[in-house]
Length: 165
Image (cartoon, helix red, strand yellow):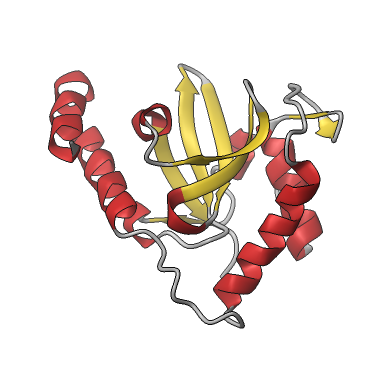
């Protein structure tokens, strides 16, 4: 499957997509281990994120929205980082994609921001959880958890930024 994706991407957009596709396949096959001790920093980060998710789950998507009555992807990420970690990050995906440190997709950690190219000039952002899952504000379903391996997200995967050290 990964080789088919890499070949299709090469035929459409050149070798850069081969690297991204193979990196994403590696991520899916070798995603974060679930063997961490309950007191590990990774566990604490995920617990903080899941507490935020519990508050936001199902909140509808609204472009420019900033609250439980409607929120867009970048505002959701900004608010979660502020409330869970006390970290102020930029408001828009265009600014968030350059905030923090760019990370090789094979070296993902819980809490990393994952970015997708969802349209010619449209970006989408979510926050990585364990095992390739990420939480985000979806235009179709509101705040939810999806998986990087789903065809829609796999084909649109763009890059990763690390905020937490």
